[in-house]
Amino acid sequence: EPVANPVAEAAAEAEPAFEDFISIAVEEFKTCGEDPELQRQACCRYLKRGALAGVAQDELIHRLGLTAPSVLDLAGYSTDLSDNVMGMLKTISDDEIFDCPA
Image (cartoon, one colour):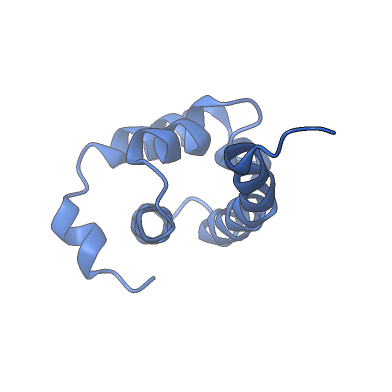
């Protein structure tokens, strides 16, 4: 009889929730178009929701613009637009993330 692996089971249960989280982020970034202020707000919400869900910020950043396909890829962003959003992340403070509505 197979031995139960609680870590693997927890990860399997968490994956659909994480995919929903990514889908929400994709839809939000789609609605921003090329407006940098809306993109900034979407970044803050994405990072805050991720933090509240217990996802490490480096993992969130990786999924946002560095994995293939990334959140920004799935939202239809060009390479230049994705680069702009990823550059913007460096200018967002923890306070800004904390203060934004999730």
